[in-house]
Length: 364
Image (cartoon, rainbow, N blue to C red; front, side, top):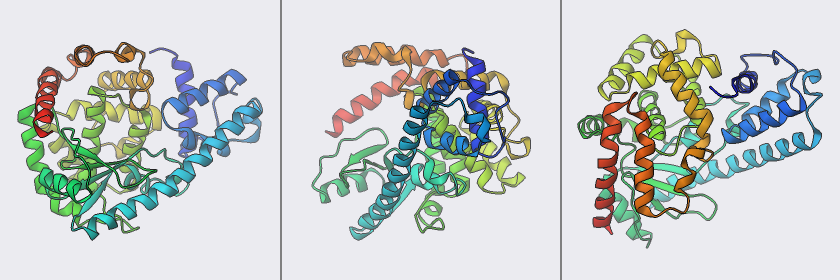
């Protein structure tokens, strides 16, 4: 794995931020600080890592250039302000849906930020708002008509405009997998879980998924990203916080693993446990299953190459400004790197991408 010493220093900063370490094992140089900032930005952990810096002994920050520190501070402040806005928008969105006769459950995002520790919850970098709207595809289409908006669909959601300062993805299904037989099993499980999700509210009265659902759903969401935009450490940290936010008993662990096995995700889950131990020092007791080093090293390497949402993946540069056909070919070639690890999902990927393209054309 390239630049492993640099990565290890960055992992130490993350561990300091979450309270697993008190200080670096070596004094960072000026170039180290720039490297730490660059990786934090790449992995969408700017605010989290700045909290780690504040926890360091003063003598360990002496080499940090003042302009870099001020830049880091400014970005952290903007993340905090953005979280305040997004928290308000989630409640407003939920209320607006209720006012027009719909139920919505906030997926990921601010719902997950709420389970972070108090000192870190407003430092998680937010994206758009993902909300699962009860009633499936018909409800999304009817909702768009009520809002006088054109429905532009993906295989899971429609982009609907509710706010000028926050994008909203309205989901008719929370997630899916590319293997059709496994996906059928997944959608049946989601249907069984649906009632509990729309009846669940966190301490702030925001409708969010249950722990049981999130343990499976967030694993699938992370898995899907390795086939698409790429995994970032922010997503992995979400899963770390989920595992640490509750006392998860052996029965729930067993049920979760049994569920993940039925979706062909047990090897990926074991790999993610290895990443969680390597980066976040997750204890063996908190793991869902024993870690798998082979799968874990592959996942971590992908994370460090691609960064948040795959924005830094140089392997995908050729897709920029390419035609739709060329992009389709390139993304499928890129996906086939996964064949060794996740063969069934990889083989079905191009077929499902083609099916989704045809299905979307029919919806227009």
